[in-house]
Amino acid sequence: MIHSLEVHDVRKSYGDFQAVKGMSFKVRQGSCFGILGPNGAGKTTLLGMIEGIVPITSGSIDLLGMDVATQIRKIQPRIGVQLQQNNYFQFLSVAQLLKFYQQLRRAGGPPRKGQSIEWLLQRLGLSDKLKFKVDELSGGQKQRLSIAIALLEDPDVIFLDEPTSALDPHSRHLTWEFIEQLKQDPNKTVILTTHYMEEAERLCDEIMIMNDGRVIAQGNPAELVSGMQARQAIQFQFAKGQFKLEYVQDLADATDLHWDDQTDRLRVTTREVAQTMRSILERSQSQRIDVINFDIDRPSLEDVFLSHTVKDPRE
Ligand SMILES: Nc1ncnc2c1ncn2[C@@H]1O[C@H](COP(=O)(O)OP(=O)(O)OP(=O)(O)O)[C@@H](O)[C@H]1O
Image (cartoon, rainbow, N blue to C red):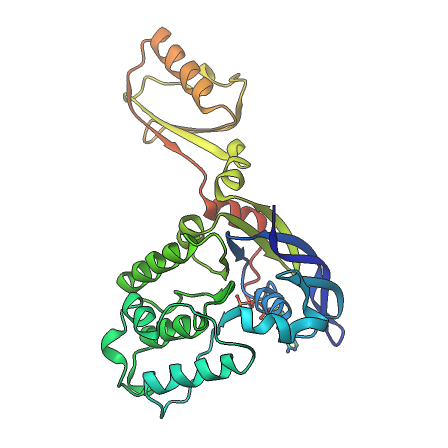
């Protein structure tokens, strides 16, 4: 298996403060890799080190098989970086700005074929904006323009830092479809940070959750969620006044039982949903209790994220 990125025990200190505290992970070529973490977790610092913008305090990073600390000039023409703050030259038109960045990128090496500017703009819903000045674009349009800039000159690795954070739902879906199209090229690797679990689940083949400068969990979205099986919960509603908690108190796989006698609802957290459901239905039948309704709460990626990260309200 070829890895586009290999991060070995990387650390970053700002004075006495350690923002990244020894992280190691690999990213498969052709995959979409998501970096998730609460505000201040160190995501932007980590991305900066990988992109060669932020100096590494210790450890090493190989990007496209080359050492970032010593070979960044060879790496740079092959990567595309979308910036979170897009303070582009406001007085240029969209066409001029794209040409400017294209020439800047070509200065780093021979031209690469890639998609045309027109194609990129069309896919990102900006075709009619070529003649607009950048400051005439909305915040969301500027954000999509920053993705187009990241894709100029056909990069092998594309870094997207919160690519849809300022977008309305329509533009977000348009951007997701665009990223899904990028993913179809097995030679391209997409590395993105996001605060949207739905985005990570839809786009990423692999997710790394980081907190306080460390890797907390890593896996594909389904694996991460299945690691939370002990948190699955079933809710039953019984006919008024028929059920008693003592009927189910000895259930083998239940990790938590909560009975609300005001609403006649039972909530059971369990490791074995099917077995627990069967047991409760059998006992209801033998006690002649009518089950009116039931519901299964399966854990989501958001539950995984929340269970691994602690939010400091000051951040
Ligand atoms: N240049 C710097 N000097 C000192 N501290 C810094 C610097 N850059 C970042 N930090 C600190 O490093 C920590 C990680 O910051 P970073 O921006 O990497 O987090 P993040 O996960 O990207 O956060 P967010 O989701 O809010 O963008 C924070 O505590 C931040 O204050």
